[in-house]
Image 1 (cartoon, each protein chain N blue to C red):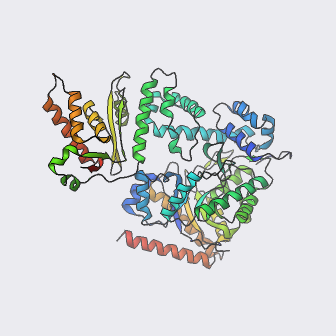
Image 2 (tube, rainbow over the protein chains, first blue to last red):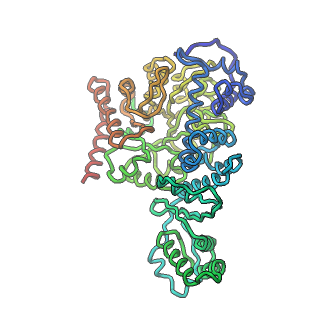
Length: 288
Length: 306
């Protein structure tokens, strides 16, 4: 039951709303939230206390506290869904602590919870955590996977499209990737870590610099992430930048062939991967 | 009892569409009358969610239900959001667009919660003006839902039900009466739930919501995590006896069970309608609506289980 209080002067709507948001989004104790500089700049503690009605079973703090707790859980869960590997790496306690710091620094200003994690990688990079660069890159990978999952569906080139290309036109063909595609180079083995979490493995890569190349792609609404070798990454990067197939192959051969390597082996490998990308539906268009 | 004043359809007994049920629905096309979708989940119009929605739209009526309109906020209306909402509503050909009588944030900061408003003349003028703007912009009837609240304010100058009734009249908008929210707020603030329902203009009710909640002893939280409790069903029956048949929807958002369980819960509403009709509390409009729903079900059965 709500307990009455004496009537008092009207409370401007904007002042009340700014006060309530400042208290609800404060991650400290109830007392800290009600007495924070931001909150008391809108309404003094006494004025706020006068406005919030207690019930027979709940105090003023308890009642506003329901909204405060739900805010924290909602924001934490939104990040936990988007960054399961970061959560795995940090553990629940540290993840929650960073969630509070993150949303204090970057409160949501979007109509959708899907956008709440957009600044999470850069935030992680700004922390003092010893492995912050690894964690930031892991977060970038998870964010990229979410983005591909939500990208518009564009039909890939068909077998008929491929068959229609004259043999002498392949060298100058230019490819465009589907929208549900992205390509990444990481300085740390974050893709290996992500796969280990996803596959519920017990062993994880060490957090030492070691390049990981990966492309993320969605086909028939199934999102996949594939590890690439450096030369495969380079070829895919050049192709999706609009370089002709012939020039891209040439460039990759020049970069990755030296006295120790076998040119034929390299050609066979990247040709095979190229065909795999075509079959997987990575490309949406070919211009000859 | 009155039909709703715009002759918006009684869609029958629907279920809130949730992603965990996409595959079941697309494989089985169960005999549900209609689905309600959370608008914000589909505004980007990409990914599997939107694909599933488009497929489901081919077979079922869809109503969009938002959580980010923030009608009560003192921030300016977000026309980027409204543009996307309009595009979705047009694509789905939704008979109305619904959201909540609340605010979600201020100064550009979104709490992603349905925050309680001050029931004052200032708030009333502010919200009425915004509803009219939004209805003009969307070109569709806006239907607003009463929310569950956990706090009341001394600065409020009228009860929630009076505020809602005046808001609906002044803005000429529809109402989505969430019976569970009435039940929850009535417990939390110790008012008479029937007094609330009696004050709501029945001809402006376009839709009902039903859901489960979590009783914490000292208060109730609107969690949508369980079956509808008997007290809420009785309130639904009471509200129906005033309004007649309106599109009725079951929401289940946490600990979501298999689709058949959710659908069966939604269909319990029919029994409460029937019992009200048997006691002479129903009227022709309600009976017609029920028959229409049965025809829709039969059609769905014939079509989907052939």
